[in-house]
Length: 396
Image 1 (cartoon, helix red, strand yellow):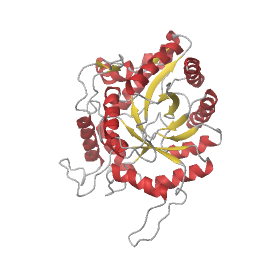
Image 2 (tube, one colour):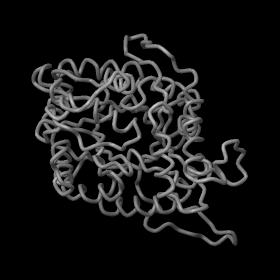
Image 3 (tube, rainbow, N blue to C red):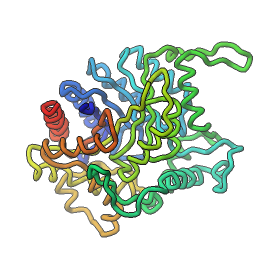
Image 4 (cartoon, rainbow, N blue to C red):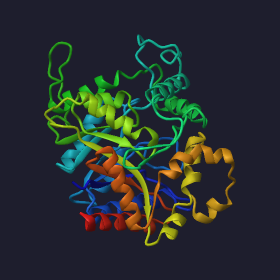
């Protein structure tokens, strides 16, 4: 069965554009994605990135909801390191009231201080964001310990590049600084499984206070919201998604080396639920299509510099044009920092991109592919999504 196509919009701001223009482009892309037949449109949450405006998926869904009528809208995902289940359920319950039957709640983990009694040798529980970020990165590295130090390939040939070391680029300090601003002083995040369970309880309207009183989340109780769990490795997120019988999104677009580890861990942990009788996998993919391969490569030429800015701990820069990218400094160390992301971006004419999308779907057993595309020119970005959808529909 051919995988469904969806859109993952990171809310990019390109060089030369102001924020109102970037938001106007997001609304225009939403209309175009719906017209092209994409199944879902998801918005990511990122903070302290000059080139990304996706700081609140719920707000963005509210902005684009009125400009669309049928496409599902949601988050990919809400960061639960600094969010509470109640606030999230109420927000997405309100969105469901505005756009009934169209809302997805994708939930992701993020750096956070563990509970005060959580065992830790890093000082994260008592310290600030720096310690929590270091603990988060260490846990991510441990979850990916089985990942390869050299390139490997899935049985169908899909490239699984050498594992990127998240501590090599300087992003840990930025994660800590971000957490210090996002999380209240002294606040800590419960276990991820507890947070997901609380979301489910609140949506069902089964939450009660210490004295037994009903505490309904209104809006939110009874909302027709589809819960998804996002993960990048064979770690906590994959295990929780499987154990709770929820659909799972694995990332080929930002953690390509561990995408199959994540999917395998999810399937191994899966227990049927009221939501799903069997595992359901989506995979996020970075792709740029154009009428010719040469043009597609030109459009994607800013990608390496953009990824470098994130991994170097600078925060995502406004996406550069091809000419701007060519003028920016570049070193061998920069090459190594972004190598896995550049080589796993799907770039080419519609046929080439569709071939590689099919390869990703086959390798992961994915029922859906969430495509993220950034180009400097907005019309080229919209055209890329349209060309991919047309070629995918033709093959189906």
